[in-house]
Length: 327
Image (cartoon, rainbow, N blue to C red; front, side, top):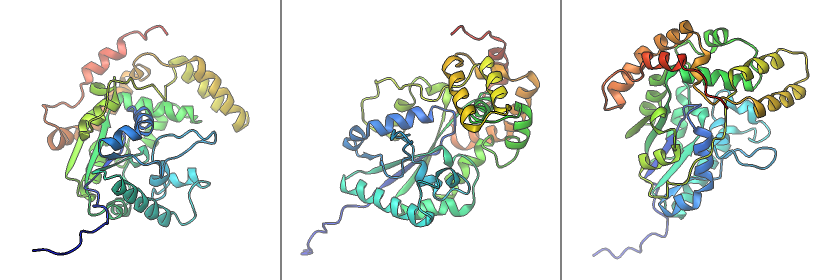
């Protein structure tokens, strides 16, 4: 007979689910919903911490664990120098420890972490830091992926909203059409899978779930919560006219503060309501698909139970030929 006194220590967390993005696949809407519904998730055994979440200057939370991820990210920390201590690694480890402790105190079986900063190809040390911080929990990776022409243009539009001055092709050649970019979906996802020893990898096509990314995410991880509440659109893209106006502002000699104010005015009046890929030329669209062909085949083979292709170029071309709906 075992006469040992049962330990009062909470049981270790069984699972850590990392939502790595990608960018421009409803991530902001998903993170906002996850953050606002932390209590419902906790009742279902899922811990979504407010620790490591970035709060704006107005005190409004982004809902994303941007501070946690930026602390060990090779470049994103520069955007949060006022929010993260100088000892970034120490901050990361302590925040991860507190998240795990809080989750255990709630008797949660799952921790969910979400940040688009994790979408990309990074030094091996970053993945190992994440794996070590939450050991011995098993890892699962969730990635939403979007048809590449849409994702490329949407990513470009986000850059334009933030001050980018180059046209799409010049920006893509320098930032997108290279091995380590986020356009290589397989490389991004597989590095997370391999370097965290993830037991499961969930890849969802954004076009299949965009009506309610929160519901799709909860279904994927098995979170038993009310999923019927609509998810708001959080980060809209500019229309074709809006893009040109934003580029004019970004290329002007106005101060940064003036440019930011002018961009906000444009985004208030010129939001896209139709397919983003229509802003690409046929040659740009074809080049984007060409860069993605091998990656797509690997994703279908490794992570998805479906027949290739992952995305359809003919569908993209047909959609691009359709007129943009009226606002």
